[in-house]
Length: 372
Image (tube, rainbow, N blue to C red; front, side, top):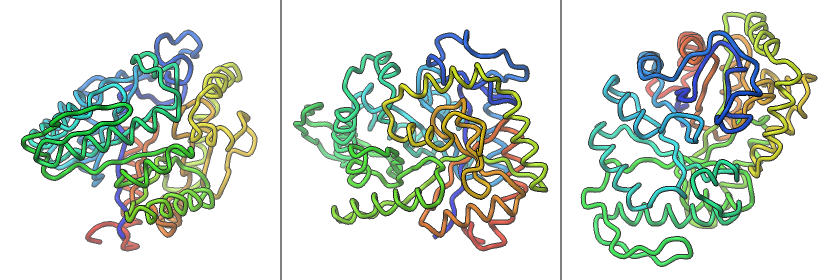
């Protein structure tokens, strides 16, 4: 089992500081609670193309782009970036509750033909009721996951090449069809830490994604999902979504983490934690529990730093250390069964080079990369 490396496209903006992350207060409608920060980069197509080209050059297989009202649309942005790249795949995040599953199946098929097979799908059920209501979605947490299960059943049915009927609680489809199914079928990445999410992952996901928790907690999740999948006669692969701060020495890496932390004042952290604490996402609550909203003891496991999660929703931890240290931690997660590593760092352009030129050769030397 090889390690598959992916990077991140900051379609909500980027910068040299964590303060520019605006999704954690009010979903990006205003930025009134955010301390003004210098060095913020707009997510225009020219800058995102720089990141995509760098990721491709550095050997990343794909780039993840987020979904929500605080960032650019993932479908449109990535299909544009596909014209600037040749091999790079795009892990497109989308919310199943705001689009017809048959239309999504058709979009995926068209995307595959336009990009010659470079689409991966990241299904985001959604854990923020306020954000969901902006899209007109008023289902509660568990019913959203039930709808996701139906959605993915219809998508796969529509990819079957013949009319597909479905009669569920959330979708009723007669003759759903994608006349020219995508080739290859896009792999489906899916995450969720709640009791409602597990069976959906086990039944429908190709790759189950977890955020960067300490290895023991990641192992518990892997064992949980693997057991549920085996009950259904399926095999699920595993991935982790985590940031990186990798330098030529551990001292330099931790100095960078300290600088990022130094940009955060008490008011900014408090505003972020108040907003994130309202999330219905079990995974988000697990992220918050790693640091408790304080700056104390942010290294929660060797080389695993929870400082990002003080102000950022979602992935809130980073691998921090020398290139060898970060490779060690990746190897540790890999030994637990993690195959896909979806990585990011601030700023995303520069950190892609630090990782690609520093850690990737370490992994290749250990025989962990495809073809190494």
